[in-house]
Length: 196
Image (cartoon, one colour):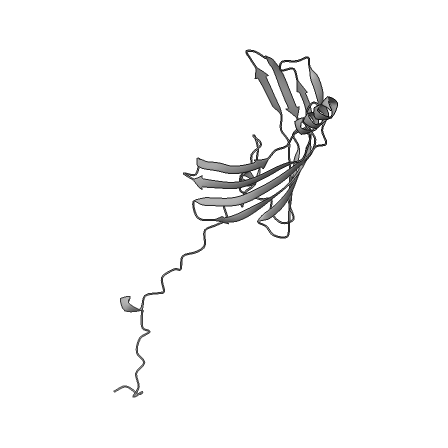
């Protein structure tokens, strides 16, 4: 006869009906977390990803173009420096495009000088597991040499998007809007004054 009138039942195991709660769907990871997703080189692009808080990115490039046919020649732009600085909001960065040295001999004797400077901002609007999208705005100021300046301020606004196809391939695109005005407007006014 047992000495204890109340026998302990063995520890119960969860039955199938008492299975652990199913995992909740987690938010997709930020596709702009790696350095390679942030750098906009080897070409000059306006990708979606921003430089993160407390970080900066200095990018440089070189473009050399040879034109055949008529008029023939070549042009070069270097170092195409772009400084990108992260802000307190990790989805926002500010960008400064330094003047670059430019040369051109396309259809004319060789000429050299400096390009205009630019200020820009980029904002990552959002992302999913396979895509990300954002906005970009830029103002280019007419600070360059006479041969290479736009002559007036230029304004650019872009909607950027990217879609991941696989771990090696993705598609990216930009829908851009530009307000361009050049030095020709000044030349036009000057020639009108001369005719009067």
